[in-house]
Amino acid sequence: MSASRNELPQIIALGGHTLTTGDEDAALSRYILSQVPAERPRICFLSQGSGEDAFYVANFYRHFLALNALPSDLSLFKPHTADIAGFLLDHDIIYVGGGNTKSMLALWREWSVDRMLRQAWEQGTLLSGVSAGAICWFEQGLTDSISGQLTVLNCLGLLPGSCSPHFDGESERRPACHRLIADGGMADGFGIDDSAALHFAGAEPPRVVASRAGATAYRVERTPAGACESTLNASVLLRLEGSGGQLND
Image 1: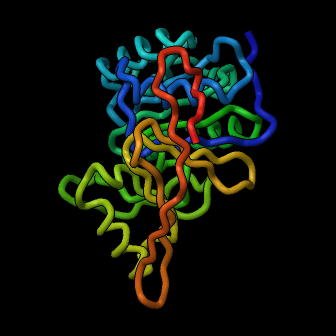
Image 2: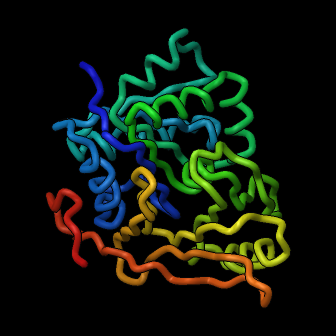
Image 3: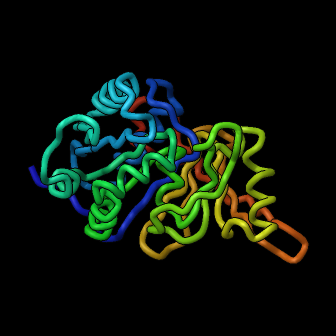
């Protein structure tokens, strides 16, 4: 079975998303699945940020099987295919989980997965992910990879600027993002609430979708007076069984 390809390179970066059967989580997942033309999208899980936690991987399979997708995962700890690039390119969607971004990127670079992900993106595979799996696509990300600290991490650079997830879910995220951008320690970029996502397609400005009212994303930029935050308008996904990612603007 060959993968479906989008005409434009696309990335969906989620600020916070858990793999449960709850309406909010399912709505964001349906939205991701609806962005590719396949009737049953082939979606591959990269869980290196969590050390390939078995419970996380099992939840991924349960979650996306229930949504009529065809899930799989790529392990870099267990024996795996020699043709990693071919395996990734055989999927419609790649979904990257949360966890330790710094360790995840180091492992990817050792196996050249960073280069393979860029190739997949350029060839029309939809890239997506949550938390670590959101910031990894940007030039820089605000990460808690070091316990007790929020630091700036250089990432894959598929998307310009910086990203900070969990903007409304972790109390230190927003002030740290503002401080680092104001001081010039981190590039201008985006903050993303839990239950919200930024959808980038080609060179167009990102679309913001959310699975609960009040969740959204923000543009944060350096000005002479400090960091300036602008709220982006979000389209709220209808949280109805079988909605297919329908939007309620």
